[in-house]
Length: 239
Image (cartoon, rainbow, N blue to C red):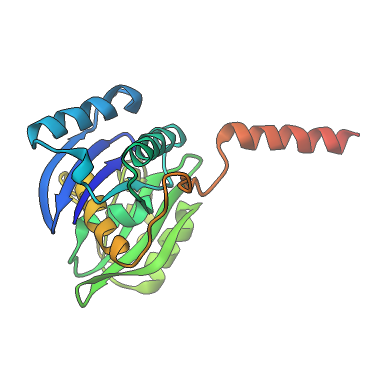
């Protein structure tokens, strides 16, 4: 089983190849460049470094959302293009689940915090037992205080990760009532290697789709769409 993974759901751009539970290569950057500039050159460089024949891959894993609307569209378009050209299936992995999988084997709960603006987060709570990741709270878009309340209610030690951690660190310190920690640098952002590892399990479960079928899951409307709906609502109210 050889899986190519693509994650451009946040500021991080990451591509990787995993074959039979072995990471063959990974290229990850977290720098101020658009994914349209970086993703394909990164993939080409990785391909050359590991002598990868794209025809030999079994599936293409992609971060399916939530995340940056632009980043998700770029990653989705790249995966769909490769899938169509190579006639390979897509494994769409929920972004929050892939992030949580960075901390495989963590003894306490794992809570992902991706900054969704306006004091909201893309989040979910997970734990590992019997060699598997269990979902406590499925990925969702909620107010920060709502997920903190859930963490407190569970009463278990928790490790937070994601780009929302530095944004909300002060509020976590004020309101989190359980023992908590923050994931270190090599685990706290998107990694295509984790995406591939989880995608392999989903592939075996039959959770695949064709390139034509794949669509990113944004979880909520974009700001432009929200503003358009608000204008329409106000216009209707004034009639």
